[in-house]
Each structure stands twice: as structure tokens, then as C-alpha cells.
Length: 95
Length: 474
Image 1: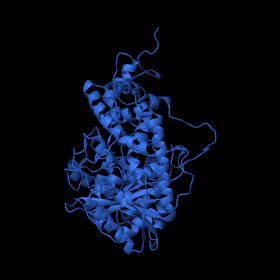
Image 2: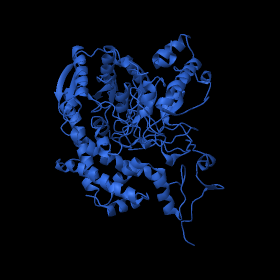
Image 3: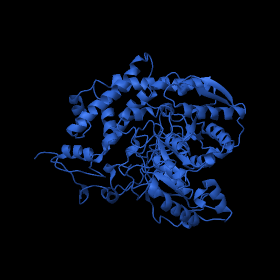
Image 4: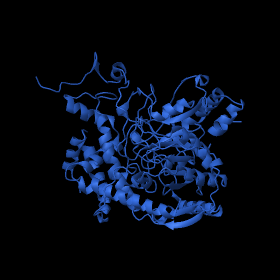
């Protein structure tokens, strides 16, 4: 149903590094769960609209007025690593 | 009189009559926690000397304490969702529910344990360790709001907040013999609730009796500018619904909720509960929710899909835990490898797969269509019924570790609670009896969107005519 290769592919998409052991366990567990989902295929759904929200709400607006927000200091205080007024991460763009 | 044993509404009366004070109540609670929490582990932390109760505005609940599930933001306090990835995270703002509580003089007193990011039905996936069921310490308290339910059951909390995405308030309420309400989707603001599945999540009360649930919902419900999915509808005085007679109320019993998989002892207890309501004058009707057996499959596609997207924000950059790699990409993957527990990874993987190119139509879109059918089943049932009644969970509390390594079996334990989340309707669990070995069993009532008053009316009538809610584990 789902093989090791797919598990590695999905883990890369999900940005999670897996140990070999974990990948193996997930392959078996996800296969079992996905085969349980097979039962859905027997339910006819032609001409049925999908429901993404059970209580639909449209055009929820509020006045477009500026308001206060968290201060820079409050936000930076949460960062695992900071430098001055910035959140520090490893270099993204090659020079 | 032991103050910690009391309900919120009786404590409020004692305060008003000047027979007790918030500081006495808090002292009593602290003593109780000291005595029982070491063997239960319902709390993660107590919020120290937060504020002198006397400093609260003159609201109706001056200084009454409340337990808060660890996924609801309290400004300046740790809010970790019991995940290593939010290690040390102190929320810079209050959730709307917390602001509303404070405005009424109810203050967050302690953080309660939960499954990591609310992924679980047993509170076993918390990175801080399990919570034990106060009725039997070898068993799970249910989940994911297991800490809140256990704390209220063991009288370590007057009342508490939980969150319910697929049953996370009602199932632990049932397994611990307390009252747990999942409000209609949109009844309570989700602002400041760490998102699991945004189309399913709701915050709700976990209390010692139905009146407290009505009281607490009245405080936290209502439109919030910060949550565009919160409904712009007036909040009624829910207590007014309590004393209404239930004679003539049409109570539907969905036959699919009594089929194979339901423990016979649980079935007998729930059926006896329905009989009690019949004797009180409710008109009992058998109804059918033909697609509800598909609910688990639909839910375990939709919820992990939404979760995988919501949890993409935990990348070690802006807050929480970071594990530095050799470049930014490996920093992300290492942070998420070390930061998330097994079940969180499993659900992220499942959701990512269901949303990935080539599988989206077969899984996610298909699930959303069957979700429509599940909702239509309820619409049809509510044409002839005011309320539905059935079990909360197929079994009483299971043993610690029993289902932890078998995710699918764990998922199937949510079969009766999930449909309400998928359809957005309100549902409540209240104590309904005990198995021969003394484990609690709850009964679930479900109603139309925004008909929480019907739930309170039926639940209160049941509670007034039974004494299960008065039994205490400790």
C-alpha cells in the first residue's frame, strides 16, 4: 500500500528526519491505517459537494482600522536565537 | 465542609453569602492537589501566586480558580501542548476564552496535562508523562483533555477547560465521570487555542455538574473579532434551560451507535440511561445515521491533513525548540525530528500524504464529500428529533499502554464522538453509571447547531434523577 520510498518522500515533504527504524515502523503503521480508509471508496459520492467547514460563514468582515500589536521585544524574546533586533538563522542565500 | 469538593455554582453562593472567600478556596485546592496529584499527575504546573483574588474586578465569580489545558494560551505562562517542540514557550497573549474568564473574575490556576498537540485518546503521548485515571490508576483517563478531566474528577480543580477535535473533551469526561461539553463549531472563539484541526477544534467546559457547564459556557461563548469562524449570535443565559421539563422531548437513538464494537456492559448502562429519560417523559425514537460508521476514516484523513498544515509553523525559527543542523533545511528537519513525539510525527506524515500530489482526490477530497453525507444524516435525524442519545466511548477506561503501539485501534475508540465534530454540532457527555468493576461510563447527547440549551435541558433532567455524578473516586 505504501512503501519505504514513499515514507521517505513524505517525510522530506513534512521536513521530518526519520531514523531507519522509525521509517520502517511508519511504513507498516501507515499502510494499516490507509487500508482502513479503503472502505470510503465504496461510498458513492457523485454529485456530492465537499464540506470543508460544517458551519459555513461567508463574508466575515471587520473595519480595516490599524490596531496595536505585540512589540518587537516581546516577539524576539521568544526566539531560540537572536542577534540585535533580528531572529538569527543559518545562512539561506549563497554569496 | 471540604471546599475543594464543591461545584463552582455552590462556591459562588458561598462567596456571595460571605461564608467563604476565594483565598480559602484556593488554599483548600492547593492542599488537595498536594495530597492527590503526585499519584495522578493531572497538572503540569500551578500558576503560583498569580493575583490576589481581591484584586479582580467585581465580576460574578470574584477569584474562582480554573484549570486550563496546556494548548490554551495564558499570557506570560508556559503553553507547550505537552510537546518538546514548544519547550519553554511562554505565550505573549491571552486566548480569548482566558480574557473572558478574567473579565468575569475567573483566573487560570494550573495547566493540565494532555496528549501532545491533542493527538490521542489517552493522555499517554504527553512529553511530560501520563495522567492516571483517578478511578483506577492502572488505566488511562481518556484524552486528549485527560489532565482536565482527571483533575475535576479527583476534586483537584473546581472546573476546567478542555478542547475537543474528535472527542477530546467528551471521552475523558466519560471515562472519569465528569461533565464535558463540546460546543457547536463557532460558539466559542478559538483565538489562542493552539490549532490542531481548524475546522473541527472547539474549546469547552469540563465540570462536576451540568449547571457548572452551563455557567462556564455562558462566560466563554460569543463572537470574537479575532476568530472569523466564531458565530455572531447572542449568547443565551444557559442556566435558564436547566429547569425546563423534558416531557415530550423527542430523543433519537442512532442504531449505528449500538452496533458491533460496543462493549455489552457499556451498552446496557447507556440503554438504562435512555430508559430513565423515557420515564421522565421523553419520546424515544430509533433513528439512523447511515454514514456514521465512516466517520473514523473521514476524520483520520481530514484531521491529520489540517494538522500537518497547522504544525508546519513549528520549525525552530521563531519560538520554541531548535536543533541546529548544517544548513537551514536540516535545522528544520532535525528540530522536527527531536521536537515532535511519535504520534505527532505519525499524524503529520499521514496528513502530508493525504494532501500530496496524486493522493489529494482519493483521500482528502473523498473524505470531505463523505463528511457532507455525515452532516446530511444529522440534518435528516434532527427533522424528527430534538436530541440524540448514545454512548460516548465503546468501552470504559482501558489499561495504560494497551493501545499505544496500535494507532488504528486507538483511533477506533473515537467512533461515537467524531461525528459531532465533522458535522459541527454540539454534544455533551455526563455520568451515566459504572461497570461491575467500578469504572465510570458516560452518556452522550447531541443536538442541532447552536442548540446547547437542549443539551443542558436533557442532561440536567437526567442528572437530577440520578446520583452517578455524586460518586467520587478519591
